[in-house]
Length: 246
Image (cartoon, rainbow, N blue to C red; front, side, top):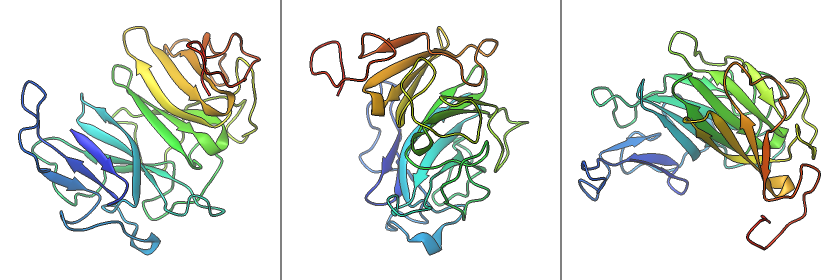
């Protein structure tokens, strides 16, 4: 089990029994810090083995990798951004203080600038994995979009470009919107492998958008197939009943 601890700026890894209960109360490994006693670092300590403010994470079991969003403590400062760190979590290789395999959303582990490109993200990220098709979905909240990366072992690379973008017509646009194709400050993501649907929390519009994410149908600027929390794709009113969000 992987637990992102914002206060300590690290990820704690716990062993579980076959029934899902904790094998022991203490973490077995620490990712993002060199030891169990190390805590959050400052910007001058960013590196391939150091996390600063870990957030959303997703586990890919087939290749035993952890995709972790690492934010900066200066999220409100102009120019600051986030990155996605990819760790090897194979039982024979995982270790406290291990280096990352790859960095996505930034050119390297030492960079956390807010950007707008196919290979550069902003702030407030969420992640979800499609294991069968080897895709990583990344919600880029400050850029009002969702990026799709090919994470196949023979394709993934540090600083790589996304293959598809949702919520925008291209990789250099970031305007928020309220429609069947646009979004505002997307956050948490969930992917349903059974029917290949992607659920996007569209925070700025008080709704959840549902996309047909089948590889042969998902395209840049695809339209959502369904909306939850609102009666239609043109309404964003906060609601407090059983049918809406706020």
